[in-house]
Image (cartoon, rainbow, N blue to C red; front, side, top):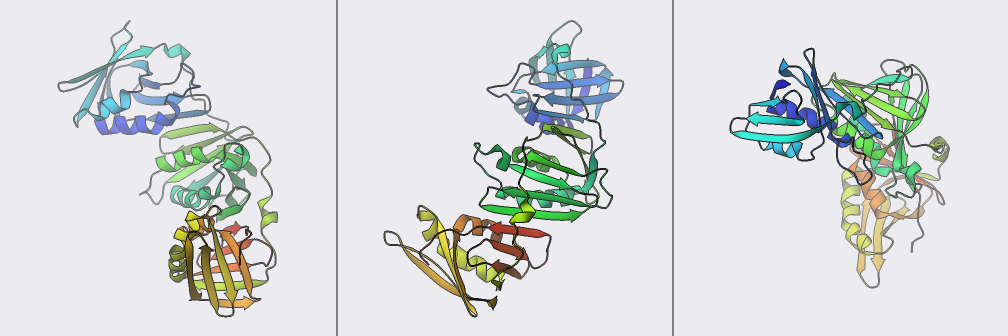
Amino acid sequence: MKVIFNKSDLCNALDRVQRAAQAKITSNTNNGFFISAIHGNILIQANDYSIGIKTSCPASIEEDGIAVIAASQLQSTLRMMPPGDITMTMKSGESIATFTSGSYIARFPTRDQAEFPDVQEMDDQNHCFLRSKDFVEMANLVSYAAANDKQKPLFSGILFEITENIFTMAATNTHRLATRDISLDEPASAQGRIIVPSGILSDVVRLLPQDDEKAQIKIVWSRNHVAFQFGETYFIANLINGEYPNFHAIIPKRFDATAVLNLKEFIEAVRFVSPISRDMNYQTINFHFDGDTLEIFEEDPDIGRSDTSIPVKLTGENISLTFNCNYIEDILKHSSGETVILHLLKNGPLLVEQEEDKSYRYIVTPMRGRN
């Protein structure tokens, strides 16, 4: 086997599959990088059974061959080599792969290729297409609302809900909910409702092209697996089993009041009060809507008090509510436009609506406070 890679191309290809190759405490002995140079094509893949990723890489093949390299130092070693070409060689009958760049030489043991579990592609009967930039934007606007508690695996995932023409992402930790819809340019081949691990979604977002407006991602799903196909990369992963709650039923249909605020003023007011809130055990922040004024405050006898007011256009009743300060800060970080719209209930959740994006909704439940 003899293949000449450009260093940047090889390192980028290994980076794309590394999530499935990294060593884990519970990993099997098949973890590692599978590098195939056959009939003019380079295939690099990794598979730990819960995640499988394969991709291609441009290179000049002088002698066909296949190598399975399990060394965790492969990527870091290749990155330290000088820019330019890296030549990979493996002599027939030997179990050592050698990487050479000028005076830099690295050798790694290989494993039996027959024991490596090839990444198998799913039947694509159930699939849809999205623009990559739209998929990334949706993930960023929704995924932060998922649970971090490993004891609640169902809520640590992101719900994908697919109808004929609408793709929806939703995430909740049972105290808040973020959801975003997008219209599909091409109807989905089937309806679907699947729960994708948040870590998998983050990995896919990291790998997607960010500078190509026309780039697409194909999503394929079955009962237990989801696959993402983009460019030359195929990424398959296990789904979270379980029945995700009907989040549509969580969104209130009526409200006691609606408040329109200047987004910048709202952010600055919350930022002013938040240091007191973060030092408290329950990290609460109080809102008191009264006529054309919103008072935002928090206090603790051992810490102190912060209090400020900003103008508001309030329609409906005066209302006082208390929320988790972190949950309010999170939605403000993901808000855009000049104003933000708050739909209020006296004894129910708050719905935050964006001025420029009605398809993005955020629900947060109130807490007990001293207001």
